[in-house]
Amino acid sequence: MDLGLSGKVAVVTGGTGGIGTAICKRLAAEGCVVATNYRSEEKAAALEAAMAEKGWKIGLYLCDITDAGQCEKMAQQVEADLGPVAVLVNNAGITRDTTFRKMTADKWHAVIDTNLNSAYNVTRPLINGMLERQFGRIVNISSINGQKGQLGQTNYSAAKAGLHGFTMALAQEVARKGITVNTVSPGYVATEMVMAVPQEIRNQIIAQIPVSRLGEPDEIAQLIAFLASEQAGFITGADISINGGHHMGC
Ligand code: NDP
Image (tube, rainbow, N blue to C red; front, side):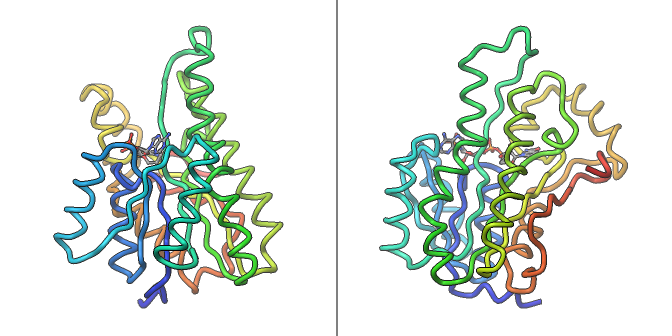
């Protein structure tokens, strides 16, 4: 199916990470002109090389998404270099797990800043252009643990649940202007974040997943590409689970 993404400029945050790289590759395969932020020169070079192997370019912008000023600068630079942004995927995220009684303010704020406040920082400088052009596709990457809560993750569950609140409110504000805003909530996906979990615990997690395996980053990326397409114009304000049946319902 042609998703009609050819030539559209897409900004993906956290493109150097497991799911982010898959999203960059999938959107490039669909014809998007893709840009991402980075913090490490080494990871940026590795992503650039992985994209080049397939014959794709990627715009790379040094930017910490917890810094609103840097995000504004990145948005301006992307539009100057590549053109108006049509697709935004707020994907970058971190975990800092611990029980609430041991939760330091640093861990709390780092996770809220990176997973939730960043959505404001990155989306705010791009939304007016989308409104003027009457087209936009925004996808926010939440988590199964924002839907159901997870012990040891009060910070992460709060940020990810909050992200879907942001999705629903913004979706209502911009729906008449051709912009959709959706949340994608993955379950456990085979990236470094999850492969770093000890194998025994990983096996216990897999035993709880009806399809009996972890998700693949490209499975998440394919859903995002569809949500970014022209064809997905009637889907907005949704929280789409992609978790192998691990958690059903909202
Ligand atoms: P990774 O750790 O592999 O990638 C995270 C990305 O975010 C990296 O590119 C990282 O950059 C970037 N990042 C983190 N903090 C910042 C910051 N302050 N400024 C700029 N960039 C930053 O994670 P995944 O690919 O596994 O996860 C991607 C998203 O999917 C996250 O939002 C995560 O919460 C969510 N998710 C993941 C699941 C999984 O099973 N993996 C399950 C459910 C949701 P750097 O390399 O410089 O650190």
